[in-house]
Image (cartoon, rainbow, N blue to C red):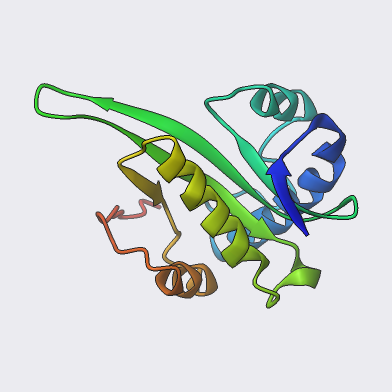
Length: 154
């Protein structure tokens, strides 16, 4: 297995993985994630893959994409601080490939990219209803940075 920057030829397989992630969220939070909808159009994916500020990495096994990590460089400039974070917007391993440490390898690859590029930290968000993701990131050594809270208004 090779982890590399995603290319346009990977889009059909990335779209299938995006659907798998969306289904996890829409099953738990259909009020926020419309079942069957898409996160990105094909053209939006092409733009993202061409943007060095939004690198996407894939776990490739002889042309089969087993997982991905969508990332975004975030520049924080205030009067009291100036630093860069690498934010993982989305990390997915194919349903058929879970349990093989692919997610761990993707995460460690992105962590290494962040270190090599002088980032202060690596950040991400996890939905409260996604227990498996919370356990995975806990095993990776991530700690809670802040809480986002809501009150749903019917």
